[in-house]
Image 1 (cartoon, rainbow, N blue to C red):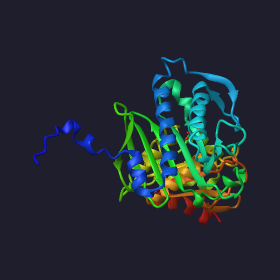
Image 2: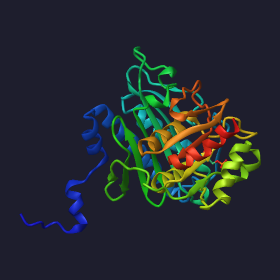
Image 3: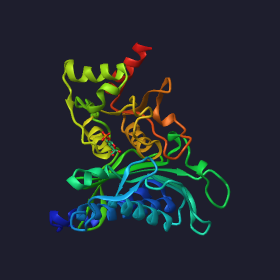
Image 4: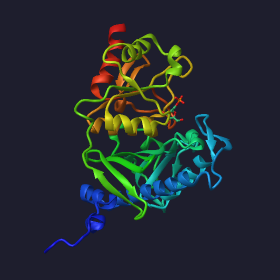
Length: 341
Ligand code: P6P
């Protein structure tokens, strides 16, 4: 039959939506419900981010979160959107949010098989100046056998994650996820449709990563010597690397995933465990980067250099240093610790 679809709607006759792709990939309706709930919350957060100026959402809420960050008004709003979407999905047992001091244990009437840790709006300090932000999440399957979940259902190794993802609120709203046996999938929100449409399946780091390093060099003097030497190498040795640092983890990791290079938030004299949280910042990014052919390490942490996904956190807001990106650059940094050892 002659094709009569004008290009503008050709793709709409067979859209590769998030629900369709996740169903194809898992045949698990509970998981499809979970992903649709997270996607719905991300669309609500995206809309709030883009209307923040009009809706009076700039500025602080006047409170602090569990790790001492000033909560922005939009942090609190984004947290409510994520909590309610997941709570009333009826497929979650335990929720951990950067914005909540304690884990949220679902009542038996609402409890399901997933445990979700999330940062509802990472990088929110950048909202007032219109710099990219994002939502980050990791998902485990409940292990305990009781009628409701327990905190140990989410204090698990990164390797046990069944789904990791982030939603980037940049020039476009993009969802990047990996789940069960899937590769890394990239979706772009079509605001006219309200659907996330698949734009890349089985995303991999470039064959030859761009020479980009991403770190807050304002902390240079408080890093240990091997870290200072490693970063000097990127800046001073040939080939000279380009420095790129947005100061919003989702933006810096998204660029590293697509262009290659390395992102680091190491420990320093003032922040012995680094700044970024294990469950809902480092683990999901490490899982995505590993599935895309990269790697993530703690760097030298508590006397050893550890693959980040091997960690088992002891508390829900635990922090860890992170060295993440292409093998070429991560290995180059870690070699300085082997030498120093
Ligand atoms: P610094 C944002 O507050 C955040 O948690 C990450 O998104 C970001 O990568 C990091 O902190 C930036 O921290 O100390 O460089 O401002």
